[in-house]
Length: 382
Image (cartoon, rainbow, N blue to C red; front, top):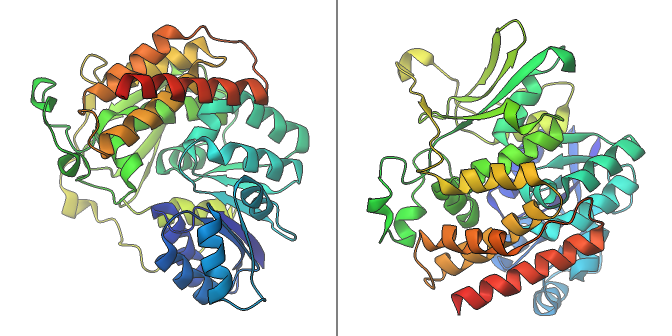
């Protein structure tokens, strides 16, 4: 029985992780979890899965849950509670499905405690990929990718050696506005941006998909997960989201991982690796139903956020930290109607232009740069 801690239980990845756990009760049990503001769903999850420990964001939610449940469930709130959930006694695997850089410290603490990491929190690797990978190597802890693209690459690399890899090809749906020109993006609404054609995701990730920042963050993740230089990581637009990513080898052969757009597949693979279990509820991929697959080269002029991500990754140091923090603040402002869609790019560009990268930053430097960047972007918005 594998004991799971799930950070971000009420989010899209979190609820689908719970679906996998529920489908295989003989294999998995939820012992700790966290969630933010969705109290109604949080209560439903706690009632159904009976975790031993639950971390929440604020004291008000904490007090509400304490009144609702008996003493057999332990509760905590704030950053320390999130860390406690990540390293709770007996946890074998941490599924990091929170959104934002808040997932970084709990991940590092879990690695220190020799807990396997199933990582769906892009920002952890983007913000501090060098620290996370150094920690993982030092403690001999596996970093198992949950994102469909990185899971696809990981699956394609099974049985292969690093020296034979020539290129990673990360696929992208193109998001909500893939058929619009930049001129047509001037006055798009939040509702339009949240209407993703293929995937059901949280609001922040869906906006990132529309700007293609999501793919840029995945490129930086791929760099760290697979120790691959940026010039050997390409992005390929693929509208159907059937091929989740590809790997090209030095003999020019290519492996691709295919499947229907269903995140339970990569989630379950991370939880069961190196084995596989049935995924009965997932729709079988029938290529004859699809008929055709379409591909396009990613255009940096059309998708500026993708360009910013490549440039930030190549510079390294604290530049990806700035990229991520500026993007989080700008996306939050767009979702609240404070800025227009294309102003997300403007905020990120100005934050990057202002920053002088610090090479090989420690955790405190990363956290300081993160906060300074957020403060700067807020001055642009207000």
